[in-house]
Amino acid sequence: MIRAVKGTRDLLPPDTAVWNRVDAIARDVFRAYNYHEIRTPILEETQLFARGVGAETDIVSKEMYTFEDRDGSSLTLRPENTASVIRAYIEHRLDQRPGIQKLYYIGPMFRRERPQKGRYRQFFQIGAEAIGSESPFVDAEVIELVVEILTRAGLQGFTLLLNSVGDHNCRPAFVEKLREALLPVAAQLCTDCQRRTETNPLRVLDCKVPEDQAIINALPSILDHLCDTCNHHFTAVRAHLDSRGIPYEIRPRMVRGLDYYMRTTFEVIHGNLGAQNSVLGGGRYDGLAESLGSPVHSPGIGFSIGEDRLVMTVDQTEAQTEGERLAVFMAPLGEAALLHAGILARDLRRVGISVEVAANAKLKRAMELANKSGARFAVILGDDEIAAGQYSLKDMQSGEQHRVTREELFQKIRNQ
RNA sequence: GCGGCUGUAGCUCAGCUGGUAGUAGCGCCAGAUUGUGGUUCUGGAUGUCGUGGGUUCAAGCCCCACCAGCCGCCCCA
Image 1 (cartoon, rainbow, N blue to C red):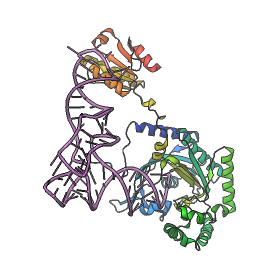
Image 2: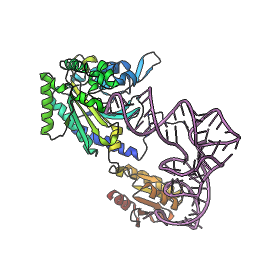
Image 3: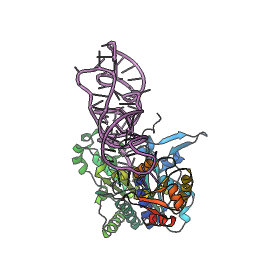
Image 4: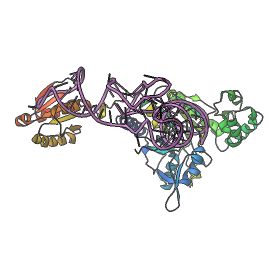
């Protein structure tokens, strides 16, 4: 048997209805915040991610699906979408369009990690980017937007984490300070942290080993070392969030795994997800466009929601498939009735009523299928009905059945 | 990439100290009822016991490898 490749999966009905509902909610919220959809290719030049995400990140150094095309060029299945959106922004000179560009996307991403619950090699992200403004107002609006999507999707009990990681002015100095502070204590930390002290001192702050916490808590905090610009920005973001009543927790030790983040970073976690407890991550990336070759400064901020994790966490019972429920199940008896049913079904479908026709079943079987399909009505048409110019319309819930004309049929079904 | 647990029907699972697979529950199909579903009753189909080796007279059960899923680490969404 040929199976789906490791870390990928088929989404089947009725689960797909939940996904569609989440998609629809997100699109609805995006529309309200004046975001418009962008669809970038799933395949990009490998260089884009090496330069955009950072060659030293885990994503780029060991998780990408990279292969050589027939002409020898190196292509990669996108591991995230921000770099692609910025690439498209530069390529199509979206900076020449009026105002800030607010773009959203929904689609699959690919990372070759060890699969786990809530972590797949092909996974879906709902994300957005607001490009062309440094204003902290935009930061707050993006965060509000994402909270709105989660809330409307029915997610409960999530926590918004907020931090600032500084910019090219203050972060290098902080990293140096951190390295200095780590030198005398590194030997007492776990082996991972000893390695991180050399490779990426910021990661030490994110360590979860209980024994290390006392030492880590005593390390300097990025928030005490922000430059004036970053400090003002962070204060303003918080003021906007506070005035809108959006609750958050400051996590000075929250660091992000992608190189391009600066100033505002945020994350939403949820307790029911286990080890993969992050539903969403995002932040500001003011230098990204330039590093990808933009001729103009194009500051941006964005986020991406892990749709697989969101769907997993949302209350599935609430996500009923009511909108996709079958309206009419038709049971024609005999060849003449089947011809008639074909036309009637077409006419009902043209006005938006969903119809299934039992093409080749005895009445008992047809009624059984009508019941199992969850149809609201069954329509029985045989010689009797055709002769009388009527149909037998049965309400599957109450069991009531009446002879109705064509006009009454359309009316009764639409009134439900 | 590392460590641990698990793998029997479409699903949930039985399967004794190894003796040659279950009237199991749900689901699916059919009949009881040749123009009426949901309840009931009756019957039926579906398994290379994750895959490949090994030990043994004999392996679903023991051993090894691999694959997949889950949990943790790492990392992130």
